[in-house]
Length: 411
Image (tube, rainbow, N blue to C red; front, side, top):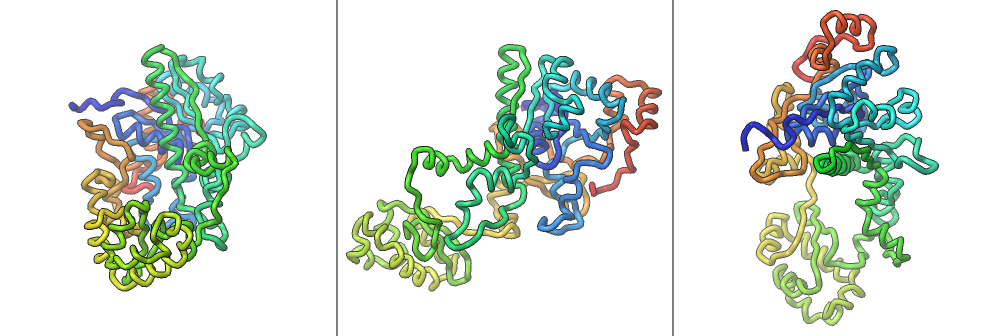
């Protein structure tokens, strides 16, 4: 493909904060969209997210670049009497407007779909909330841990028996929801291509969490009988379980009864096939604790490198449990452009994580650093049609605070 990318010429205003909404904008930018990140005078709070425990500590603002690369920054005080004039021009310029402002504040600021669609009937208004647009909790604030994980049922299931719920990985629900919002935007763009009409599209952390937990929630909808919480030593299925190798590496195996003979032979225990306790699928389940104890002993006798070769030879589906420092060394990430170079961020930020979508024959836009707060104020205001005198007036009024001098790495 030429320098023209899939979304080249698409104009996006990212008025959202934190991760889910901005994450959707990042995916659009990866395929060529021009994204303006609109922030309050104090900046998106996610700019300081890396300084707040339990986020991993670093000198470099890694999460900001991850979720805001390839964007331009405009600082705008939405409470200023001059803000509506700028907002109107932004909406008229844009193809897509992404918002996550809480409903009560959105109403006060006249940021609802009905308020802005009159300026641009072709606008795709993309809204991400914690709990949805309707219902008694529509106005509740939500983060991925509260809305995506806790409220959806996921957090109740991702733990072992006897253990309390624990904190999930930061941003994991937000990034999943970002893909949902991106999908809604692209669906609306396709509709606009066919009809010429704009759309109001929405998703929520709760909806994405329930979708992720869909197998279990759907089971609850039909009054299914649930197994107790997972107990590694007494699982429902010993060949669908977690084990540890001699070098203390944890790994998972996922087998069906059809794979049992090849598996038992591969691990050097063909005698298990003649053991009456494990002679058919029903007995494998009934005697899962006994088989787990046997497999624990077997697997702890050899390092993971040995079992990797055994499983590979026996066509066993397995997964090694890896920490982030191990994940970044995985050659699969670089070979498949899951991790890509990041330009201009400075410090140790030389790579970033690409969005999880690939279109064969299309090269994504090279990842460039996220913007400093208000870095592109003057450039964007000129693009919106403001002359130099009016721009100076907006800067003096504080409606658009003056940008600070650019540094090599956003902080």
